[in-house]
Length: 467
Image (cartoon, rainbow, N blue to C red; front, top):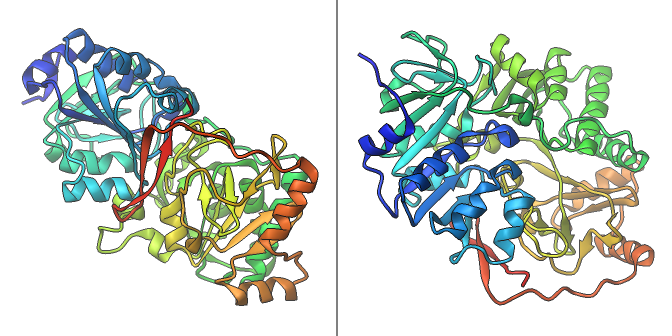
């Protein structure tokens, strides 16, 4: 027996895909993904219209999506993150109805609850056998963890695995099992694994970034959380990775052995585990090829689903056991609300991803950001979009000082006792505006182009058009 079919056209006919259906994709190949564009083109050639796309993330490589929206092939879009190319078109009103933004934990939660039903899930799998047992660890397009695809496989009405490395049955070291898979399609290429490394995945050499990173590492050291069993997550930005490197030096010097590193995993987190800073890594997404190699060869580097990573609908998730998370921001306001969805002009260029999930779960959620960016203060009176609520953010680290949320006075005292430059967030805003001037508040349009859904399924904010 085999589930292998010959073409996308055959799959479309077998599954009886119709106008108005919801199809889903995952983003583990990031800016190297070919599958979303490949499938949408085939559906467009079949004359299908009014499709809803639920993609865990949309990158610049998915620019053809704009044309499918303009032609009416796609009329609905759900995502956890949308890059600047497609985001700009959305902000300018190309889509008639608002995008639904979820978090990395909220998406599998809503899928499992039936709030975000999927008719057909298309899973880009670097290796699959003829029955659909598949993994991201092996093959020419290896991307590592397939954590964001698990919910799609488990809960979609129909599931198609698309692979460029078809192997005989059974593939034993699989991630997603055959029990969820209806059909398997072999293609020449599902993507370019070099595109996994999109965004900043190298330690910053910028002096400002290094100052922030040193402050951040010293703040973690002073927080009372740096002790045996500590768990930690950091993003892939340059200053965040530098903070992880400085933290590793402190942990090795003090002999601190953490329990686990979490999230999207980079080489630097792998280095921390291999140096003895952590017992294990829980990986929902590999951010670089060193992480892909590690998850393939080291049993202490474990793949987890997005549900296990951050779903509030699960009986427990890893973010609930997280001690420290380092995050970024495009804006933060004086109430510590954070924007990671839009730039300072209101254009969509990101999304929550796991931002608000980890902030809600961690004992200390820390934002690292330069005080000014593009001649604008990062601290504002009110963010253009509330991506993460301020009551879940504990610390803002800038090169001009560290602001602590008034909800955490004991943290401010610890930092002051450690000699760190603690100041009020209003003071940081004043310092920034002395450098940049006070910007005029931008005027946005009346049309709602996106609804930002919090991890618990409630509406957190809306994003307005820029024209």
